[in-house]
Image (cartoon, rainbow, N blue to C red):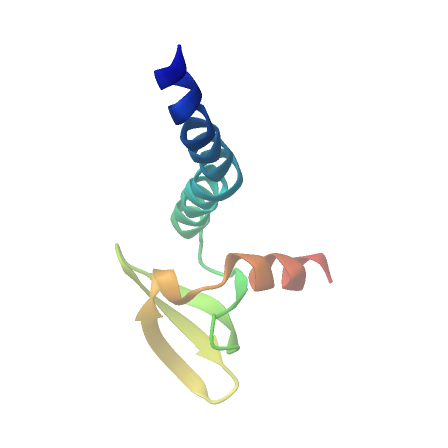
Length: 90
């Protein structure tokens, strides 16, 4: 019983860290992957660096977007899920 009392705080700390840090991060990564997979031609997006554009071509890992200054090819992972969602609400 004394052994359990020694390890209980560490076990509790691990459970708290898992539910407040690790699990939400895994959920966010999963949502971003789903967002990247759901992109389609014509979607208005914002990149993580702040570039606004419209999807004109899609490939497996890359996307071509049209901006005011021309077309840019970039990785799908460079598109911000949060900023693109807020742009779609406007």
